[in-house]
Length: 413
Image (cartoon, rainbow, N blue to C red; front, top):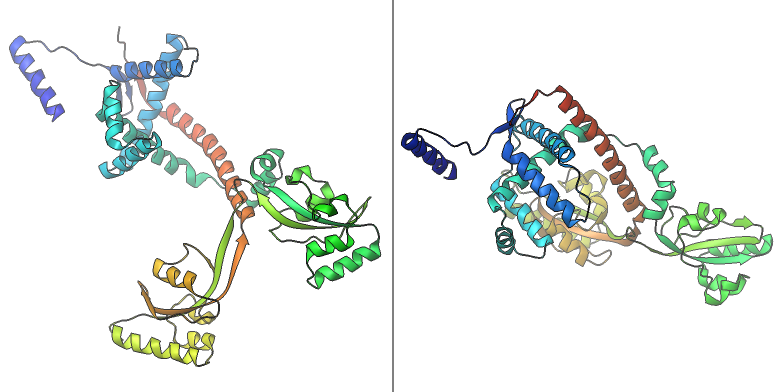
């Protein structure tokens, strides 16, 4: 509607006065697109505002204009790639992004729009700028992501650096048993193998001064420990007890008691098996219901769950393994299955329940809480390395795009 109104105004002006006043001019031709003079002016104004807000020295106009022109050329080239590839951002998706931006600023979308307009900015223009940013982000992912590979060796190498250790690894709380003689160490090892309580063994055998506080060592990161200790407990889960460690001060045993840090994570898991029947045109819902109730009765009567699952379960993934689904964390299954699983007692046969896959009953065989801190650390390390490679690859890609593009600067004087 705004474009139509503008066209009408221009036509009226043409017929009434025989002259059209130019409201904007093409400043740069970039392949099949153009950059307008107003785009450059707006970008200069916005950049200067950002410099002032951050108390930074504003570059000279010549440097600023050149940098902005190059940035707009790169932006236009990426938008053209997006257009050619059919990248589209729907109004609904754009609205979700704007709501997230508003929430990050502690406001509702309506409040955010009002603040934008009160400050003198054009909300519709802001919408299109954000839409373009989203298109460019997708273009960059498409251009670069598939060309990046990160090996396990690279992750391992990065995790061994001081940077990764200081940023990613948790602090660890160890409990220690220290003895002076090999014969005593052998006896402690025997009792550990027999399952005796580590804390009790500290009280009986340890000669270290920390015996008085249960054998606890101070909270430390792995790189702050003696190398003999760090090598023994590196990447080990909560509850791990080390082998015998010999040092100049005697023989030591360590137990990982606690971990703390932003990437420390423990995940509750259920070892679960089930039997599934899926109603079909051959066997309708009621017939399937009667059959699975009969199978459940047979299991409860003492027949082997695994054998019945292998013979009757219609889950292609678990039927051949006695219905065993392995260890499942929260979020690994559909909600109907998960709700029954988490509310079941160990070795209890559940009632019949229904999901999108059909009719089930299940048995939780065991429950554990798994220390997945090391997996979280590896995932974060992967993200860091990916981001670095992405930035390098993107810079090279954009430089090549710029070098191959047709660019003509118009003389606006």
